[in-house]
Image (tube, rainbow, N blue to C red; front, side, top):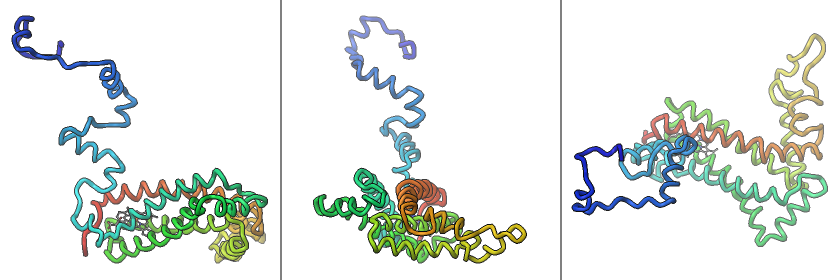
Length: 284
Ligand code: HEM
């Protein structure tokens, strides 16, 4: 009450004007206490969006609501400009993360169980829905990311000031393909084993890091070469010199933990840059 300013009131005056004090139950008191704690105010930096100022603060400080900047070019929200391919890629990534997590409850990455677990997921789950959503979602994401990159290229959006975000995008494209590649081995069928045998063979030719790659011969101490078939990039990828148990485990960890973590961090950087670069580009 000390904070109230105005003419001094006496009880009879209050009774005349019939002022009704707002009811303050234990729920309201708890809510007021909660929203003033340091923990709450460090997470939510705005009040309820009931004024223009608070509405702007909500938009500015919420990464999901502020995925697009507060001010937008009309073209930026037109489907025929962006094709929504970036948004679709993000949606597919989220859905793949969710279905992938569910698959982790059932799939065991060992030579004994990998194949039978996948067959089980296909045969015993109605319509094999979980695995099919993950598999088709992965195919779709590769397509949407390519189309997104194509749109960005065709609208000249790789030019300054967006060249940094283009580079982040290129890394994400590589990571998307690596996610597909590592996931391909997990069913442990003949197709998977031989496809990864051929694919990982390419790591032999990585510049400097593959023992048959350009520059590998330059990495030597005197007469002793530093990169061999048994410690080069292919060996690191497979955890051995052929596609076996070590490869299956490494691909599993890379597929479920390593690559998704890196791409998720890069996506946050990507969206933040879209905002910082002045929102989605305009037509050429
Ligand atoms: C891997 C998944 C990716 C996701 C989830 C993603 C997501 C997005 C989203 C949501 C936008 C906002 C505009 C839009 O939807 O078109 C965007 C813009 C942009 N992206 Fe991506 N992106 C990905 C990959 C890439 C790739 C591969 C490149 C290029 C190599 C790229 C380069 C850009 C650039 C330069 C912009 C700004 C475009 C503009 O201002 O018009 N992104 N991205």
